[in-house]
Image 1 (cartoon, rainbow, N blue to C red):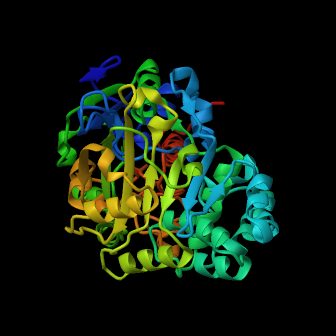
Image 2 (cartoon, rainbow, N blue to C red):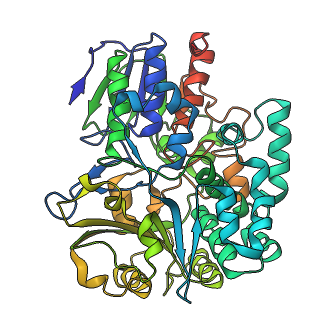
Length: 484
């Protein structure tokens, strides 16, 4: 499939049509350059795609489903996703975390409302997050940590005093009750690391802050709407999409002054043998990926029957039980074990977006963390965890679709071993990905650049990796700056 005006000799070729590759393509095409994106899939989107995976009429998000960073993204605001057809849908509360005693910890959009629900821990929640609860601060985090003005760096340093600590320590030292501890641990578990690791607190803080600043919406009709909007912006600016083109060597690409890769560093190393200095090539070849995921999509005969009805009002539910249970599950993964009671991230988008399923029916989306490349079938363990907090859930399953880590990688080859985060989120690997370098989007070859989530600010659907890569290419190859 191709769109836009074909170009014989493009200025730029982008390999990979995920959100970052598409974002870079939009910006570079809008800057007046001729750009071709080549994508192995038959539709654009990478980890931001939707399809009828189970039964006709049930639309499932294959990878990402809930998009707090998309609505906070400065570059998506610049491109104007809403004007391109993306309609955001919010649930009444961003997140619910049911507890074994039947209560539920709730992350409200309002910081003060969340604090009020946390009782004696409310003041500590506000002290931890209140100084950073504005979109300008999140804008500063969505760039390399060492960039930004003095004010931005000062706030980042203040944030780092707590954020660089282990999430387990922050939860134990700052909160007394299980509700606040479990709520924070569940957010921090998005790091896909054991929660005694340095830096995991930052993930918990950023996820909670994103809820307090903008909420956790989904895209009406499916995450594919985001990718389709970016593709429309790209072709409207004169770019060309070449779908179904799997690249195995640089010789298969059109001649161009610059090539951007929306790929893992390991994939880039395989494609660019001989084009990069040996030491740099080795570092890309040895780039550290993180743990994997096991994903399930359900077609349901009704809504998930949560024991506590407050869970029905949240598009996202963290099913992990008590604070200690979340710690244990993530520790098992870090030690190479598939947890017997996994921490399960559940989304129920059809609760707020009826277009996802036939009338009266629903979709369910869930995954848990597992060791990279894990071959164990986690279906029954995930469903038993949901059943703990939603008795009768399994009776509502009409059909299911599963992806183990190998299948996740087959779907999107950048997700090596089932790693959905663009790389291991350990502190050094996260801060200095893909290799320690002042400009992480450039390589020693002045023609080759990287724009994937293996660069700052990392995983998530926000397009900022593509933004900074596009800015680097314009400056270094064409002597231009991004307009506007």
